[in-house]
Picture 1 (cartoon, rainbow, N blue to C red):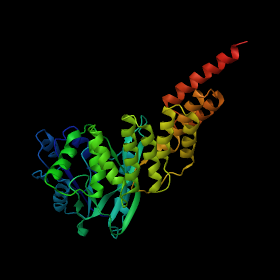
Picture 2 (picture 1 turned 60 degrees about the horizontal axis):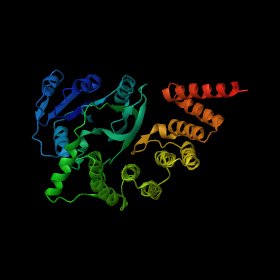
Picture 3 (picture 1 turned 90 degrees about the vertical axis):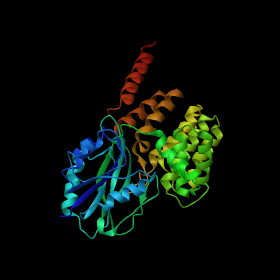
Picture 4 (picture 1 turned 180 degrees about the vertical axis):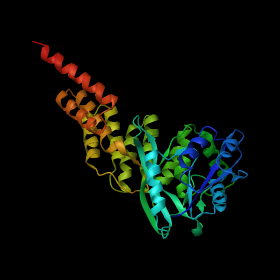
Length: 362
């Protein structure tokens, strides 16, 4: 059986670190925690799980901190997590089985990363990340912010998920790092354009965000999922600014980069629904329901855009068009995917009441 070092970088994570470590402590053989300047009780909490606690002076470089944490590992493989990640019970079972069976010829294990869950705990958005790495390969993190490891070697993709359960988000932290880089006249990469634009957008600096989203979209070579996200984010900015035509054109640009994705089709449907062009909205939503959901992709997948969201939206569009039978039909289609949806349940009752009322009129 392989052995695993958990390597984490933390700072002021007293609200989440214990929750995280509780879910992984029975899986790993070693816990390495690198603290980048906590002033809360983070290190006190961590000390209950491990004595391997190291201080690292923060230099606005996530890769440097993560590489330092990796340098302290001593086991066969390195697992990395963020403090607001957890491993759910069903995934603990899968992870332990993986640990007992993994062939040590594997260099990197790609695992699911679930972002956000619905009221029933079902993941809303999923993508794969390089999560378990063979220590002797000496993999290095790259980029000061939104860091990544180049997945080279013998790679295995498994059905084990890490679930992100965010409690707080420091809106200005990432933006500050990018702006320090710019002040220091460090050249931003194509990948940096995308993430800097997203940080600007998150901080409502829309005009500047447009500039960097456009720079990103003007070049080839990025991940398709980043082009999808860039088109969606940029489209929403144009919508906020009242330029619906540019918003729609931006979404259509995504088809330049790869096969159609339901996420984009639903956004196009929403654009037309907002201007009450329900027939065109229905067309785009219908296309979304006919697309195959990608598997084992590095890019993110918003699961509901392939079924529940478009069916529910089509139901509303047909209702607005006065086609009650169609509205009922598509509301039930949405219910096939989320029978416990309060929207589906409330719409069902509403539609039934309208139909009953219409039948009672002489």
